Length: 113
Length: 115
Image (cartoon, rainbow over all chains, first blue to last red; front, side, top):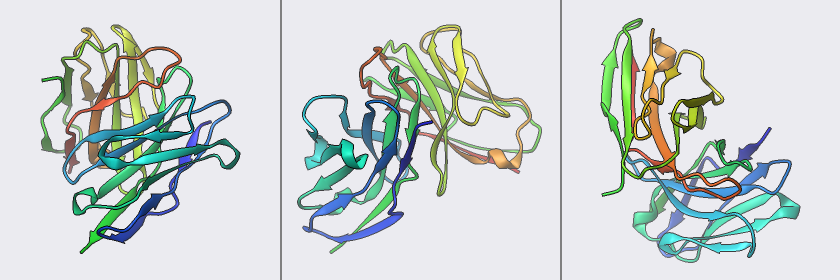
């Protein structure tokens, strides 16, 4: 069965500092991987996704993520965070047909001035 | 505007009183799904539908029903709600192409409280 682990429940970062959110997945084949962001009181918005090809993927809002098969990881990064990045971030893995999307438990990001 | 809409956005009800949460999308997507979000558990899939009249169970289907009579609508039915179904519910849709990382588009959520 597919699964996702986000080991950090809550992360606090200073505005302008770099960010890395961790995601580890378990899936028997080549995974489809996603990062979604949920702002307070909002639905989920896709930041980026990995399907195949270049293991470093670029997303919206200046985010990027790197797929590392050997480490079963898909960590999300941003070189300089902005106060508007405060939100909850979810990593997800999809199966081949992509009818089943399994989410991690989320990482809440707080930005301090 | 392309979107997924859910109604109601907020609902407080009592144990055992049947309710329906509606979900509609205007993007002609084949795939639709329901999730519940609980603190510390992330989002868990309840049911999904690959197309009209095709539905299947997700990870937590107990206590829920769905139907897909039209492509755009995918209502979630709680025939006898219980307090453990108090949660934040999201509907999502996707164009779904086999073998492709299809993005799911999410509705704004429905916060349900069962007393």
